[in-house]
Length: 117
Image (cartoon, rainbow, N blue to C red; front, side, top):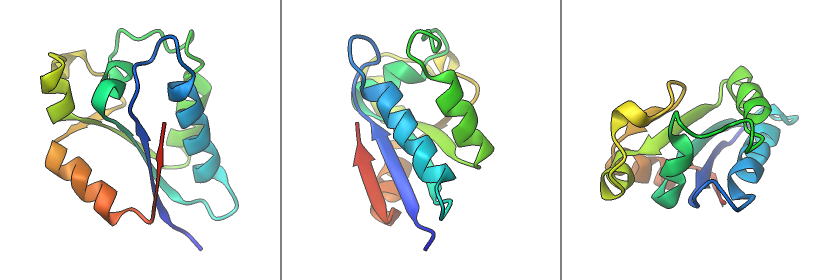
């Protein structure tokens, strides 16, 4: 049965495996047998991974992102978390939508399942 799944990336991108592993999980959930609806939300320190300046190759992100988007997955970043960390909307990668903290909270409440990385 198809479900809405929210994968929350909460940690800074470098020195950890959480960002690429979270994206890998999102990709797998989106492409699995049931082809769940998957949204990746960059929240808390995860907003740093949403920046255009991030070296996606070094973090093993491009393949995971390409597969997620090919399965109609979405990527969003928390505007409130960005503001708290002085990250401007202009710094965010073009394939990631900026959403209000309230909208992110609505997504958490509406999701059938959430995964934190």
